[in-house]
Length: 334
Ligand code: SAH
Image (cartoon, rainbow, N blue to C red):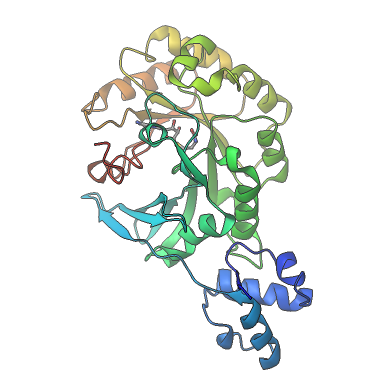
């Protein structure tokens, strides 16, 4: 009989094989929290039950097939799915701890014009096990204290597996991360976004990039199906409640979306909405905005209009690990 991989299982999934809820939670705690990879080490479970578990489940953490370290200390890890499709995670150290950026799909269907992951097309959805596996499988796993779901893919386009992964990451029997230490970035897929807000499992970041529908559609074809106006209306109706936070990402492409008119558009669109804007310089191998000067200028424009906005320093640029560059090197597109 083929054993099921325990990674990605919720306790209910273990109970389905006839184990009690107590045993199921214990197993999850050993695997996700204590990061044990052998049933024999689960000392609070009787030996016959451990043998039974072992005959039905396997425990193996995925390990990256390649790693590249940036001069700024960030490390990009390349993983492969069972079908051989690539996905990546990026560890960004800050002091003794660090943020891990994880993927939810191999490739992406959204085809944003500025994003390298988009240019590789869609390969496959990752399973909850593969999503959580990035958090447990990277070499510096014990140092990770923040998770950003901002790697390859659109998480709300792989909603069920992403939700399962969020359950495992936040549950007390799971990885036990605080919801406010996890941020999920999305182009704004409705009604999944509403469910996610109501479940209160993470902070929400919405990729804005242009306040006007027409201009946004040129950068993000998904605007046609998922207009930003609908997303904003939803966010006003279902506010992200404290301690969780709502933010918007604004990628500055010099000469395209960084005019005074754009800044006023952002201020009007977000007026009264409790949130802040993360201004991101355009990460491109051709480096359009070398000193990040244009992005910083746009951030100041927003601040002057009363919009809380911060500048996000790119990390891992030299190893193509900065926002939107995942897949650039592993796929040979650079
Ligand atoms: N699909 C999700 C999450 C993945 S991308 C989303 O779009 O939100 C994470 C962030 O990186 C998004 O805001 C995305 O728009 C941004 N990004 C993509 N390509 C980029 C690039 N070349 N430079 C800077 N940011 C980029």
